[in-house]
Each structure stands twice: as structure tokens, then as C-alpha cells.
Image 1 (cartoon, rainbow, N blue to C red):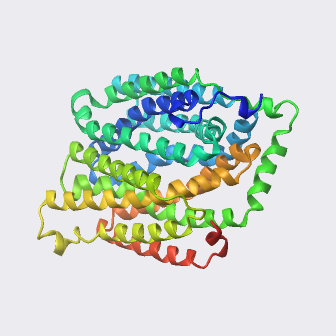
Image 2 (cartoon, rainbow, N blue to C red; image 1 turned 180 degrees about the horizontal axis):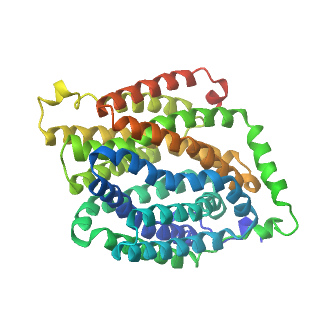
Image 3 (cartoon, rainbow, N blue to C red; image 1 turned 135 degrees about the horizontal axis):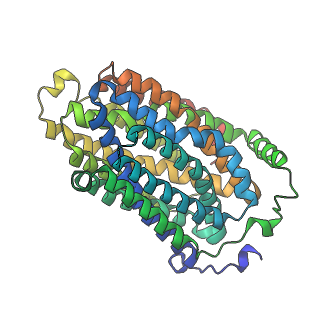
Length: 424
């Protein structure tokens, strides 16, 4: 079967395969949105302020380390096995694991250890799910609809997160962390069931018989492909440093600032997280109505600069001498405005870059590439989490925000001198 034989339609929204994939992700993403906000608040409430930075860092490392270790390996299997089975199978497994976590937590069977272990297992199966989805979208939509498909997929994810994050704090108060684990588990199972009905070409039909092709030969082929792409290598270097600086801000510094500096509750934290997603949706909408352009260099470069400035601005209102002139809620409103704006520019960076990579990488390398890309870009994050988590228990949050913004801005200036980047 050829890709052209698949039942795609000219209209993206009449493409049954894309809609089924979208619905499956919406259901599971809703549970994940509620889960992600509630778990952070659960840890903050359980361990207290003095060691919360390290505990949140450990939790996030349980999410990242399996993807770092197994990401490149999983990409080989994604290219050679049935991507559809990988997508729905891993969703079902993750759903069952979350149900088990809910039971363990209810009976107080080492709740924090259970959380960390099952989080790591979920992340392991996610290393197969994510590149399978990323690699499948170009196979079920026409190339002219690829940018729109990525935008719609991203918008749906953010809209679901807006709703999920907004109600997470209130659900945490009413059904507790156990109820949230069970809710998330059910959402993954429902997602897996819907994904069973997707019509997707098996990679085996494209010459990918796993029994005839040596695993390490495929793995090495993926590495050699990436090594031969100078632009991608430089982009990875930039992404490593940015992820080291920025990712820990979202994971550690923001929740600690909301709970301990501003003395606000889980409801406000959930609303704050929702504002991030609202900004991302607006950014994706802006991107969808901008005139089509052959090169995205200027848009990405300017958005990177503005993103760096906004990150530094987060630190200004919580500098102690300035913070004394404001109320907690006035600073919270400032944070929401900055968060909304930050995510607009973040979307104007991520979607064009991701679309460039999808178009540039051939289908036979796509699974391996995205597996390695996710691994390499996330590989530095655990170190960043440990460093920033440790610093957050020693330094004021304002110092970390301002320093991160300034370093990010300097790196963006450095990108001006990369000739390959100007070609895109």
C-alpha cells in the first residue's frame, strides 16, 4: 500500500485518521493536564518549602531519564514496527500503570516512591508513543496541510491543558491525588481504544522487516544521518543550553514562587498554568493566519529575543524591595500577563522549527531522528533540574529568573552568526 492510497481528504477536518488521532490525544491530554498540576502541588504540600525544589527535580528526572536513555533505541523500533500498534498499545499500558499508582497511593504503599517508579515506567513507554505520533502525522495528512495539522494538534493540546489546569486545583481539593491518578489512568485507556480505529500504513509494508534488518545497523544509520546535518547539530547545541536554563523555571521555580513567595493555593497555580496554554493557543492562531513564507528565520529569531526578555521580567516584581510595594494578587496578575505573552512567542518558535524538521527528515529516518532529537534536547534537563532545584533552595527566585533571561538573550544573539540558520 502506498501512502497516497490511504483515505485522506483534501480538508484536514474531514481526514478521519487525523481526527481519531486528535481525539485520542485530547482525552489522554486532559487527564495529563490535571495530573501534572496536581502532582506538583501534592509534592509541595507533602515535603514543604525547604526541600521541595529537590523533590520536584527528582520527580521530573523520573520523567526525563527514561526518554534520554531509550529515546534513540525506541526510534529504531518506531521505524520498523507497526506505528499504530505502538500508539494504542503504549496508551493502554500507561493507563493501567496509573490505575496501579492510584491503588498504591490509596493504601499508602510508599506513595512518593511509587509515584517516582511509575512515573519512570510511564516515561519509558512514552519514548515509543511520542516519536510514533510525530512520525505518523506526515503519513496521514497531505504535505500542504502539515503546518496546519501541527498547529491544530498543538492548539488542541493547549486548549485541553487550559481546561485541565484550570480545574486541577479544585479537583485536587475535592477528589484528592488518588482520584486524579485514577482519572488520568482512565483517560489513557479511552485514548488507546479510540486510536485502535486509525488507518495507518504499517512500517513493515515500507520494507521494514525487523527480522531481516540488524538493529544496530539501523541505529547507526540514524546517528550517521544526524551527524551529516550541520544545521541540526548546531540547533541541538542551542536547544541543549536553552533547555538547561528554561525548563527548570517551569518545573521548579514557578510553582515554588506561587506557593511560597506569593502564598497562593492550588487553585491559583492551576489558573496560572492555564494562562500559559491560553497564550500558546493565541500564538498558534497567529501563526495559522500569518502569510505563508518560505523562510521562518526572522520570525524565530525575533520571537527568541522577546521570549528571553520576558523571562527576565518575571524576576522584577518579586525583587524584595519592589515586591514590598505590591500585593500578592497584583504580582500574580503580572505573572499571568507575562506568561500569556511568553507562550505566544514560544509558539512562534516551536511550530515553525518542528515543521521544518518534519519536512526535512525523510520518512525512513523520521522515527529514529525524533527519538534521538527528543533524547538529545532533553538530555541536559536533569542536570539543569538538579542545579536549579538546588539553587532555588538557596537563592531568591528573582535572581534565577533574571539570570536565565539574560543568558538566553545572549545565546539568541549568537544564533545571528549561524549561516545555516538563515537558510530556513
